[in-house]
Image 1 (cartoon, helix red, strand yellow):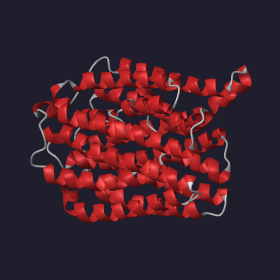
Image 2 (cartoon, rainbow, N blue to C red):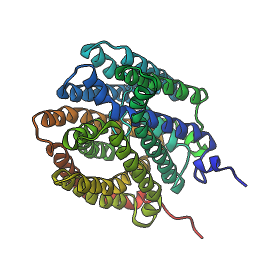
Image 3 (spheres, one colour):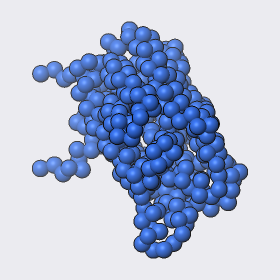
Length: 414
């Protein structure tokens, strides 16, 4: 009988892709509690709401610059070495954030570090890991592998959100002050970076088919990659308005939730998102990657708009839970779609050049959303996010319909 651990990988995936999934889960756990605690920590050291948004934007701008550097010059270095370097940078980020004395030092650490205020992964790890994953499986197994990767992130991020209650528990149980308890969580974030470094002590493997195609710059697929990058940037800009750090701030300001309650909310939304990502390969096998991306996303974003206008907490939470059950189904299918519409040699470049505009676009909107919240326009970030994402869904479906036949995962012949 196979051990449950072996089910981490889908059939047909290279076994040495396992560190990619484990590392994604560890990073997601740390990101899960950091997204909830970041605004509380910044407010506790005397910063204001607008400064929370500025720092959130700075972290995402820094991630975008690092990802751009990987896309432009990463071919000069081994991807395994870049992954290990990113893990060490994560460790340094946690320690420096815990020790930084004020706004401007935090700005510097936020820009050069790996801190992620988002519910998704917008860090330099993303294109590196996607390129490795694309070479670790082919066909339907690749979609399933991306789903496992996204699932690991969603599940561990939801558990991490629960860990946001630890600082208050430490205050009650040990008597230490709340600020010290919050700083301890950043030290824990750095420790996770060291664990990720250990996982990447050996390079992940790739399939024989992928090994035959040496990495190359964008060539025949340049046009479709740039169109996808432009569309994905609209989606990312919209998503930046409701990154977890700002959604946590919205819940605290609109309904007066405690950190523990906010963490519990993100735990359940994370579980719902994980379940939807697990179902995504089966839905995509029946309806196609593009249709799965678009027609699960539209109702999710309608729920977000309605949640912003809900008169009370129960209805708002119900709508946000429905959104969580639908909104993440596009994550593994989007990654698999990009890998399917480019040639094998272009996959690493495509992963970077679709990630960079997303990171840049996502970096611009948190400050705008925070300014709206600071001005008392509490519904504006959620409404703006939902409407922009619906526009993106419709534009994506219209632009990419003709590529769907070649990208759709096929069921194995029986």
